[in-house]
Image 1 (cartoon, rainbow, N blue to C red):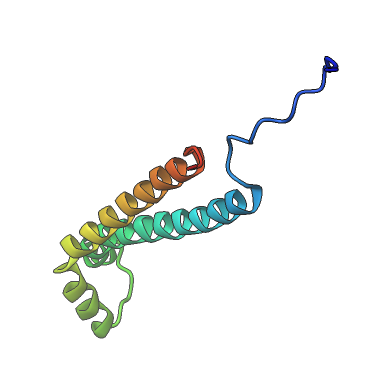
Image 2: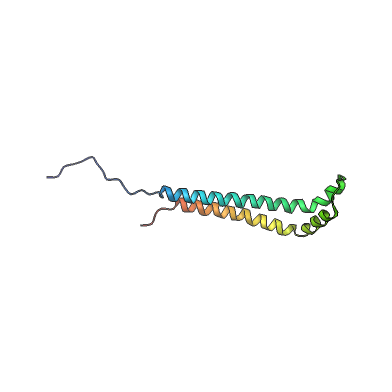
Length: 109
């Protein structure tokens, strides 16, 4: 004799497990934050070093000769700071897209 029962067994979960989700979210969030802040800092350096000495001269701010020399030398590498800033921001975007992909992926059978 078979009985009809309204009870249906639970289907397997289609999402990712919560410890895995939390780990990916925490690591990806920390990586994105660090890369974003590094990118903004490098871009700030790329902008600041070339204008530091002319701005100090124009505002009649007393600056040590060694500081002026350091600023001039770093101003020569402003393109490098800009490239590092851009690369850091691109890295943060890549981490974000990869994390979204990892969190939205269906589990494999």
